Length: 197
Image 1: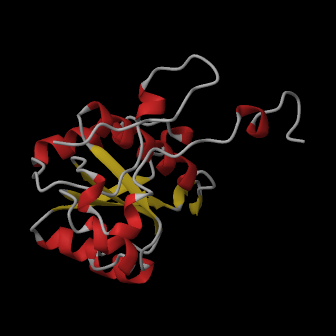
Image 2 (image 1 turned 135 degrees about the horizontal axis):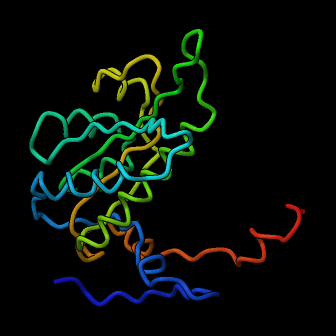
C-alpha cells in the first residue's frame, strides 16, 4: 500500500483535476502490466492531434521480463536504469522526420511536436487507468536505435516507464526526496497576451 501522497499543486485557473494530479514518479511496485492495458494507453496516444494528420509517432515497447524490455532498458543511462528496471513496461517513442511530398519525401517540421502530443495522451490515459508514466530523455540514442531497428528517417524522442506507483521508500535514498509532484512556474511567466515579451 502506498503512503498518502501530498500533492502541492494548485491550479491558478479552473482545470480538470487530472492535469494537476498526473505526475511522473520513479518508484514502481512489482505488479505486472497486461499487454491489453498498455495497448489501451497506446490507443489513447494514437488519437493525439497531428499536423495534416501525418501521425508521425511510432512506439516500440516491452513488458518486464521480455527481450524488448531488456533492449530498451539497456539503452538507458545508469541513473534511469536503476529505477526504471522495476517498471512494468518500457515504451520508446519515435517520430518520422519526413512526409511524402509531390516529388518525394520532405522534412516534417512538426514531427516532434506531434509525438509530444501523443506522449501526453499516453500519460493521461495511464493516470486514468491507475498507472503512472515517467518519460525520460536520459538514454543512448544510437544504442536504442540499433536495438529497436529504428528506420533511418525516424528520430527517438523519449523512453517511458509505466507501472503502478510504489512508496518512495522503495527507491535509493538519494531519490526519495524527489518522489513528489513537481510544481509549475506561474502562468503569467509563460503566457502573455499579444506577444511573447
